[in-house]
Amino acid sequence: SSPAADATRTYHDDEYGFSLEYPQSYELVHFEATMASGPTAPILQVGFFNYEGPLVGEEPVEGLAVAVYRLGKRRSAEEVRQMEEGFRKLVDPQLEALENVTVVEPLAAAEIGGIPGFTVSYSHGFEGTEVQNVVYLLVEGQHQYELKAQWVASPGHDVHPQLESALMSFKLD
Image (cartoon, rainbow, N blue to C red; front, side, top):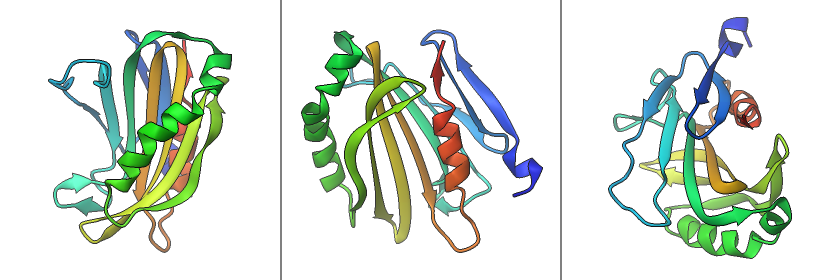
C-alpha cells in the first residue's frame, strides 16, 4: 500500500487514559453518552470512520469504535481470565440478534499491549452488504474497553491489516 494509505493519527483520551493510532483519512466521531444509565451504558464512545469508503445507507461501514464501561469493581488480570463464561453470555445473544451472522473466530482469550480480555470475530449481512467485524473486550482495573473494527471485504480492497494494526496500537497511559 502507498505511504499515504499507511499514515496515521493518534487519538488520546485524557479522561480515560488511553490512546490509539488510526488511519489519517478516517474521521473522528464522538457519540453522545447514551441516555441509558446503569452498568450496561458506556461512559465514553468514540469512532473513527472512513466516509470515503463503502456506505450502507448514509452510514460508513469501514472503521473503528471504542467504548469504555465502568465496572462495579476493580478486576485483576487473573480475575479477567476467569470472566470468559460471563462474556460469552453477553456476546452470544448480541450475535444471535444480528441478521445472517457467521462467527469467524469464536470468543477466545486475547490481550492487547498486556491488557487482558477476549476477542471474537464475525461477519453479518447488513442491508445486503456483508460486514466483517473484530471485537476485543479488554478489562483493566475498573474499566472495560470494547474495541471494534468493521469493514466490507471486497476484492482488491483489504483494509483489515490497517484496522488490525490500529486495534493493536491501543494502549493505556
